[in-house]
Length: 473
Ligand code: FAD
Image 1: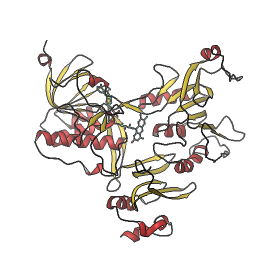
Image 2: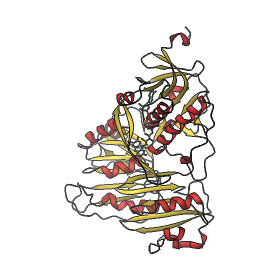
Image 3: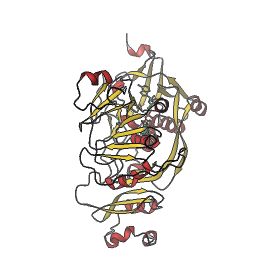
Image 4: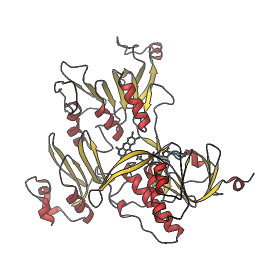
């Protein structure tokens, strides 16, 4: 039969996904046009809410993310309907979506905010865990309590956080880069942070000696081993640099394969991981923290979406996909407008919120035939977070992304206290990494935004005895 006959209800706005992007979009639409019928279709029972929102400076924002029952939203917005089911297919021709429980809903404007799903090393291996949300994080904690050794694969924010949190279990961390945290840091910042992995954490229950560690540049395939003196079982942590996963196998598979590197322990672990540097490790389980892939799959069949190289739905400067009346925001989309020279997309909470909010405004503007300009928040990349218990602020092209060889770096580092890096291009500040309580974020943000020529100041810019704010007031 005809799709249109089966449509249960048509909404002015339909938003798919109850993550930060979707919820922010719903809030924006419902407050801008309170009379509009809005539907939020989401797979899980909970939605993600932004709490404790704080504007730290012009560009920097800070907030917490909490899971809430979806009813909280419905109570706030009387014209909002929350539909608890996954979208199975999208029919852009007839402007309708079909859910897993077989219902069909129509839309005037649709916004896809279905986020990402973890890239898994292998499909359906019970010894490989992908950390995706609070459910999988709890599963991780449960299994960790019984584990003696785990292998963490990946080098993004999730892996960083994970290896810092793990206690009382040996951790082998496989990263494909020359330094840890490559998505966020250069080798210098990584070196600054590494001691925190072995240092006593404030809340650590059992006392252990401060471990030894080596700080020479890792060679390709080299590993750092950090041991806690006599307390080997308490803290054993090593990084395998510049390697990826070659193969994952069970103990039987290992014994049958006549590995050349058979050690006495081999055969006694539930799972083995072979890395591209030739080393094989046995462990209780493997954590895959290798990032996410945009969750665009359910929406593609029968439609004509332009996809980016990373698999995201391409969106323009109005958050519009290539299909009429279909918008996208958050991890599922790839920003394909001409970026400001100081901005890049990174799949983070801040950008999910900014995109959801801006997509909502664009949808309203389009309905009302009003013009709208790309929001100011996309002028300068900014992110504030905590790694290894340090405050971390990232601004602009903080890692010299896309700058070529003609950029300059200024670095100031006080061990255990702060790490400040400034990226200059043509004498102008284009990025910064601030670790610790530097109190420099506002000044640097201004210097990046106003693109002042800083050549006359030279290295004085980072002289801790000079109050640089005085310079620029
Ligand atoms: P999501 O939050 O992924 O939400 C997607 C929603 O869509 C979900 O509600 C899902 O149920 C729903 N959905 C999916 N498919 C369908 C469908 N077919 N039909 C209906 N509903 C569907 N970022 C930070 O800035 N700071 C951090 O500390 C941080 N930590 C992270 C830790 C982990 C373990 C992970 C995985 C990511 C972390 N991130 C962090 C990244 C951040 O979580 C994401 O960038 C952000 O959540 C993206 O928001 P979103 O709304 O686009 O998608």
